[in-house]
Image (cartoon, rainbow, N blue to C red):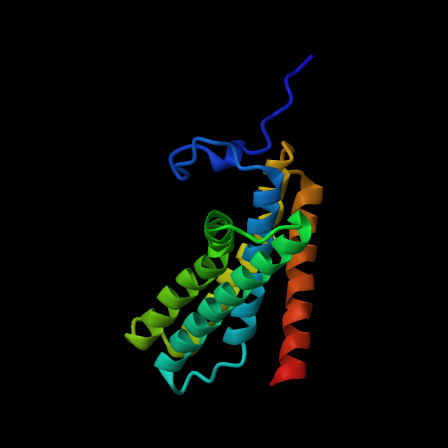
Length: 180
């Protein structure tokens, strides 16, 4: 009988310096932060007017940073309900760590927007590329989740990635329609 694959194997190796396997709760928390951050960064990117090239970077950074802080705070408060106790400093730091994927959501879009700001790309082209990067990140999480479950990618995984990307796009459209 074959051994059950380690669902956290993806989180080991040269890209990840973790020696202790990431438990499902932390993995789920980080995936949630990743999706949330990417959707809000995309929602911030879409309505940006490229006439003010530097403004896009500031909006994306501000969105990521404020979402990171809000998410960390909310998760720490939620922990008091889940665990029936006041979170310790270690708990609070763990929630900060679990919220880091929100910050990473802004890195590549800001690099691409900076290329537009420096006139290495047309600002509108930079914005479109940044938006596409976020959509690819959102859809790509399906492959990470499959890997955490010990599953190999299939055609259904690719379809799920497309559907997740479309669902995220719909969420962004609704957010922009209701808030801008």
